[in-house]
Length: 231
Ligand code: TMP
Image 1 (tube, protein in one colour):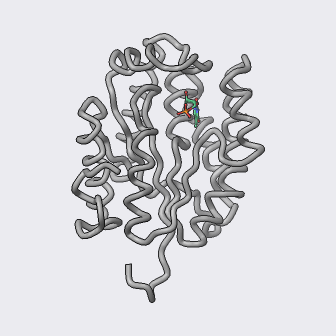
Image 2 (image 1 turned 90 degrees about the vertical axis):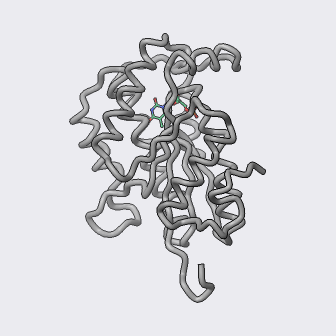
């Protein structure tokens, strides 16, 4: 990036079923962008603001009906978008967000069976009119989809911490969620980059950095980009 050029905001999201291992790679990408001279905002959904983190605690641990769950997810998203994501993008930062609306289509839509069209309407409502260009819905510039067979994810989760409401779901639920991600990827086309999360940690990191470099946002000259080097 030339110092005279104002940096353009970049919104990158990380998606995948629970146990796919995406979270451990967010830090790697943050370091690659920082090494290339970019300011990075690391955040997550549900959450990312004090209000949205309170909603996250309810969503992960409190029983509720499907519509309540959907409305809370989008309420948290709206607050997060207006308070954190849009201001960071306006400052020209790289926003790396652990999950965003594709998770809602995958978990609430495909997993819980919530109406896909209603989710599309709520998506438009929640992601329009707070900071972005008038009338435009905010979407990620790139979604890194960590795709892992549900059986492998279940094996990884079994060794993990006390499960929350979503992690405690049976493998059949995650098969539906995985199908939901595949459908969103099909619909979104270029916005999605599928990463084979069954590969080794080094290979997954290399594939992630390559997907970003391919779009011209990190070059081979930037430390770590394209090399797959881990910090
Ligand atoms: P995390 O453990 O990756 O931080 O995600 C928290 C859980 O919330 C995860 O099981 C997926 C779920 N979730 C939804 O069901 N809908 C959503 O829109 C989001 C963002 C997350």
